Length: 362
Image (cartoon, rainbow, N blue to C red; front, side):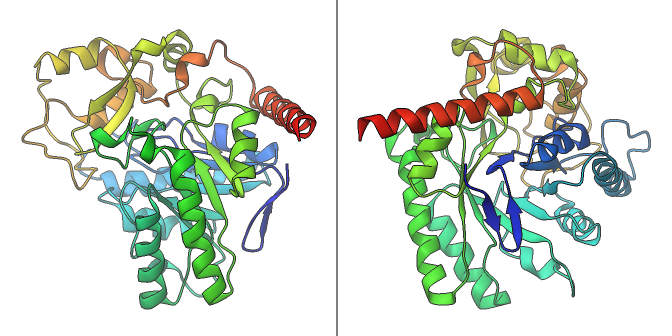
């Protein structure tokens, strides 16, 4: 695999470990991926809420937790560190400022268009800004906005398709529509990136994400023109993943029919592993709760049957009777927990085998 270049950063293994909240990808997983040559990513979403006692001080808890995880990463790795910060977070700006002040290598930002992300850059900052989009239209709007308002273009673009886990940037009817498949939207986003590259002289690598599971998948999108890939689901079933063992077992035990699209309280469809908690919600059971966090701007608390923040915190801790696990469409293919090293070696082998097989057919 050729290295992935994002500005002056060279990633020897063109694999980005996707950011997974709440607390699924922290310093443990991120440092392990970075030590293998990829980009390790800490998810900032509700990062400090798992052990919070004073619920009136959520902001400082999140900021302090993010700083702590960044420091833990640096104790374990000298590799490339990314932080994933969702636009929909109510503390989005504070998380971005913290990541830049802590001099992380890359900020990945999706769950909404990060139209004002460059405004947080401070003098001398070398942090790269990488938006996550789900269409060529979104990529074009964002590039035009950044260029006109900040004279800045994305250092790379992640394009995430509808097979991803968690919240999806698609309407429910688009998720299974072939016209919105990753194979369709990646070339369109590459075309937009090339247009801005030619006009402005800045390289904008495009990274494919959502449903990528094997080395053969990686090769397919590299040959399509992508400079790298982002993968998340596979990294959950690793020893180094920061989630509880019960969360990982939910991945191993999942069957294809268990993978479902749910309606999230934040107003977006999401892909998750069906369990008793979700079935209760579908059946109309309302989980009584107070909103202690107001973590997501778009959450309709009054209409919500449950607190998604608490559900995801419970899941991370292995309390799946009171929560659920988000997962990508290929989760049912996972059969065992492995090390990050072994997973990446497997991906490399599959990639080389697929590359050799392709040569034989040409």
